[in-house]
Length: 128
Image (cartoon, rainbow, N blue to C red; front, top):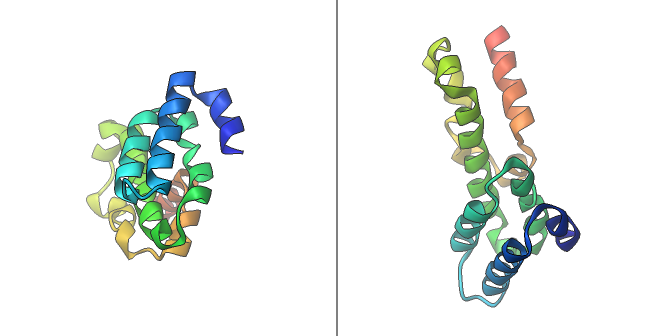
């Protein structure tokens, strides 16, 4: 499934680069942090970033929690940057605190947290 989606979203050079880093990880030459950081550089659009859900299936069980935490942190950063400074100036700082502590989430809840759920939770808090 990863290969099929990658063919639609990535250039040949990008696919080769992604395959290289995944193989390096699988062979134990790089750790999960290095793999994720390399993929963050490579998967630099929202559509490409969606490939990480497929890459997750290749991650060793002992690395899944760390993988989920790194990806969630990046999703939160992307959400905050899309909101921009104009939206943040009208929001009280406490309204963003829900997304300021991704490390307190368990790995099972973190893997299901998406930009949509974070945005919905934030909107719900603002309306409360």
